[in-house]
Length: 119
Image (cartoon, rainbow, N blue to C red; front, side):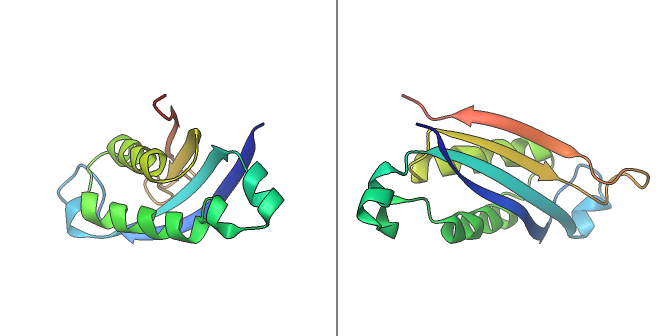
């Protein structure tokens, strides 16, 4: 069974970027995530204790963005994915980080990664 908990459009203003001017300002990131999990027990028991709490995941993602202050979106995405896989009951995460203001003529640019939990 492949159930998915998702987050769409989480907006975070944080320090990100390679260039010196980027390191002096906060930039907007938009994060989308899909976390593959098994909701069978939560559904059976109707109990939030057995699901991925998306509010907590969002809080963790925002905290990590501020703590890591990565230069590369790739680094940030990998560290967030690793954290989610280690701390939440999901077997796989697809994470997209948009940097919508990076390229003037593009709606958005960014990275998309897929990571699986270690077995």
